[in-house]
Image (tube, rainbow, N blue to C red; front, side):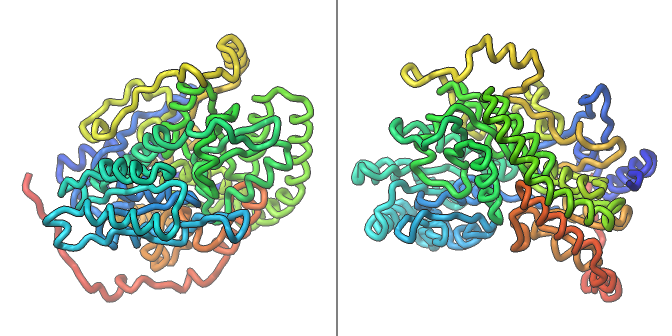
Length: 546
């Protein structure tokens, strides 16, 4: 394994980066670019996160609409989704993440292949677009008569003041057998797509979860996975594994999911959370209202998958389930170990940087570690401090104006349906024995000292990092892909997988090992020469006023 950069050189790199910024910006970025130092197992430096991006900088982030419609609701199969806004927003959110679904039959609803929009024009921007939204709902009902319709507001809609919620209520009165709800997820609603996640979670909780007390899938050990969006078929692989273990996956929020699974999700005994930042809100609220405990899991990486399966089995405290789970792990690890050891012989000691949203910048370090690839720098696009430092810092996080922009729901125990799945005494006993509920340790405690943690990394900082550290691999999104590849560095998209996958679970780990082996040991990238190195098309100097 290659040693990470010495602390002094990493500090020098940070100082050089900050020199290019105006003093006020440099002061802010200094708190967002951290040289990691882990003490007492989990104590890490404080990082600034979830703040506004520097104006004029090319950020890696998405908007609140992208987080609400694109991330959380996008993978749902039979909730018909209408984007109220210009067609550009609707088209951008149309299947850009490769979320997959598998209807039971050809007759089952699947609206994921459609991009539905009110296509606002200049006239509607001037005179209002509510009339056009009503017409769009009428058309959707006439064509499909779906179980549920979600309406998503974009920036212009918020600016002109269209009341999407009033339209939703009026249309639901007209069609009482259809659940119609709206999201105030205008792109500017927060500093990143994280605000859209929160908006989506609130509305799904108030208008969908808990609507059906009658439906429940067969099985003794039923649970939901929150924050798994089935990119490249990840959820299919997880479903295969947990079914072999004897578990019943009731609903996946929101990959390969149905409205009925969402509306009856409160009937299970356990929630597990994959992507903490996108959906921890829903897990918290379901615990308070229905008494469903939750804990964090990670199905990315063979080791992480085994650990998560064992923890789920341990929760139910059933010997047969535990034995069956161990048998599945033993069976799957035979092929995993064979491929892993072969790939590791060619990849060990290579270096990587990861700038991805959600927990992916954290989870994928486990997969890379399994084949000996060292992560020298990582960061999130839309994290809050707890995603880096762990949930223990949540009470100390300052609520600013941008955070107050998102409604905080007041949640109380449901007088009729609240049922603690385990008693307070049993929960306390398990926690005293080391079983953790409602916790997340964050990314930084799992990273080595002297590694660089950069929140909301921008293109300037990424290019400087590539020039200084020359990583063998970059994992990020499509905005960074071609800049990185033109520098002769292999680049792996971890938002949509570049038409590969699945990468979750055991078969996913094998797929990822082979894909990284192909990238790291492909000679083609060595012949790439960035065109701007010899023929810059544009040059400029930066100036500012103190």
